[in-house]
Image (tube, rainbow, N blue to C red; front, side, top):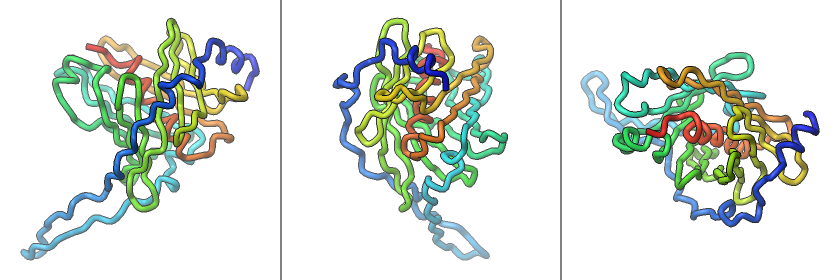
Length: 254
């Protein structure tokens, strides 16, 4: 890491005293990831099948990889009614498939009239189709992050918040109520370094590579973590921030 990068990144950085950064809402009750019991028919006999609990997110390659390539799947705009539901493929640094993410359908008209400004919930699955985290927009430029714990429930671990500043793209990242990372970059940049606000050290980096946005919605992101950022919850918040950046800056607003 070059010290010059950290110095430039910390310039005009939003203060951690900003009350909006600490404005946490009460944690939602932990919603179970276990589907309701379903009825199946085997040899003409009606039986009740109970799905097994998902494993903890701690074992997911999504969070153990050194970096992730997140590809928003191509969707032709003129074939869609409004902005399409966002879907992503996740691969690790060696190109191996580790999971995928998809936006849950909420209000279809919001995709038509609000585009990237709409509210959304994105579920992130590992390669075994297990939900390992969710990202939910709960306010203007504010997303909450939930991660699957060892009991198979979603637990809120942090949030990413857009901090407005003219000609800048800023995000404040926090975990369990404690700020740990800040992004501040030029409004024309496609590189988003996550900086430790106390030391100026680089914690992670998000890079966007958009294609022709007139015809396609495809964007490729790279999310890389420094070895010092080993905490799963914080890595999840960084990944959630990448998804928030996708909606804020790389999605049509109408």
